[in-house]
Every structure is written in C-alpha cells, then in structure tokens.
Image 1: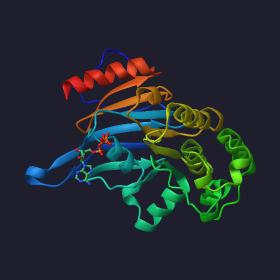
Image 2 (image 1 turned 135 degrees about the horizontal axis):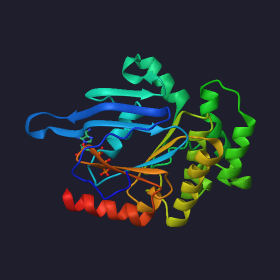
Image 3 (image 1 turned 90 degrees about the horizontal axis):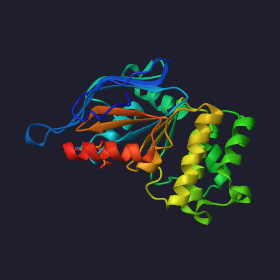
Length: 259
Ligand SMILES: Nc1ncnc2c1ncn2[C@@H]1O[C@H](COP(=O)(O)OP(=O)(O)OP(=O)(O)O)[C@@H](O)[C@H]1O
C-alpha cells in the first residue's frame, strides 16, 4: 500500500481487524443531465477500529461527502454503509438519529458550542442528552487532555478558538463513541492551536482506544494519522500508512497533477 502513487487507479481499502465503520460500493450523485456530479463513485472502504484515519484529496474530490455518508449525516445514492455491525440504510429515521447521538462524535471546522453553557457543560451535554451517567474516569482523562484548567467553567466567548475547538473535541469523545468524525477540525486554527487539537485527537486514539476519521487539506495534520486515504474525482485512489507530512504532500502533488 505504501509503494509509488497510483492516482488513476481505483482501490478498495479494507482492514484485517473488525472495522469501526465501513462502506461498500458507495456512490453519491448530485443533480442530473448536464449538472450531474458523482461526488462519490463506487467507494469501498473500511475504517479500522482504534485507529486514526485521515481523508485527503483535491478540492471537490468528495472528502466531506464520504465522511457525511459514513457518519449517517447524508444518504448515499447507492451502496451500503455500516457503523460497527449496524447497517445505516436499514434504520428508520428515529433510530438513525439515536445512533448518531449515542455512537458517533462530530467535530466541525466551526466549533458549534452552546454559548450559554460553560466548557464543562458543553463537554458533558451529550451524556445529559443520552441520559447517560458520566464515566468519571473517561471524563477526567479527557478533561486533563483538553488542558483548560480553571477555564473549564468559562463560557465559549471567554475562550480562544483553540480552546473552544478542544472543548468541541472533548464533547465528541466523552460518550466513548464508535467513531469520532472530524471535518477540517483545524481549518480555523493557527498552527500552535492545530497541533494541540491534533495531539488531543491522537491521545484519544492512543490512550482511550478511540477511532478517529478526519477530513483535512493539511499534510501536517494528516501526518498525525495512522493511515491517509486519498480521493480524486469521487474515487478512492491511494492510501498511505505511517504518513509523514512530506510523503503526504508528494502524493497530493501527484494527484493534483493528474486531476
Ligand atoms: N449539495 C450538493 N449539491 C450539488 N453538488 C454538490 C453538493 N455537495 C457537494 N457537491 C459536489 O460534489 C463534489 C464533492 O464535494 P465535497 O464537498 O464532498 O468535496 P471535498 O473534497 O470535501 O471538497 P473541499 O475540499 O473543497 O471541501 C463537488 O464537485 C461538489 O461541488
């Protein structure tokens, strides 16, 4: 998988251990006729449990669409998606909503914190909504990793962007979800705050056994992952294990030359 780039070749990325999430033949088409766009074109992929996967590719290659379909935020035109052993298309709307709430964590570029709640209240909100008791050990570990100290009882407007995004990340991890999906989580952060946030996601994987799937444009961010998947024109065209920023950049350059 780590040989020379194969940008024109369609690949299926599967894992040997039981995946946290997977898709087979995933296709998503927008519009019709002249305005038809295949945002995803027959993508088959596994996201290994307890691993950090980054999704990269040129602008418009289908990264967000792939993440949204696998996370149950968007419905594919065809193909099948599983979260663990639950097939998403088999679920009624209410069950899908409950599954997203209970088994999936999200981090978006915009922090999406509730302004009237403190950092701590924002972090524990998913537990309150799910009627779950706080797993104190998990919460303590996450809160230590977030590194807010006494600012934990401040409201979002009293926190920096980096601190707010670390709170959003803690909120995504606190229920111990099957997968944390992060869509450009460092897009609004400077390099120092980005490194802190990515370090937090990495610790979630290494210390808590969480599964992280992250869309990013930044090779330095992708280098925090265990594996990088590359999309081009809605197809999965390459994968890189144990990435470094330089190797990711090289693959991106070759993809951009082709597209
Ligand atoms: N709601 C929509 N209606 C029509 N076309 C869409 C819609 N959402 C996405 N697309 C198209 O699908 C393709 C893939 O979009 P997507 O946002 O998944 O790409 P991306 O790789 O995440 O892009 P970027 O890096 O610019 O965020 C693009 O051509 C985009 O214009």
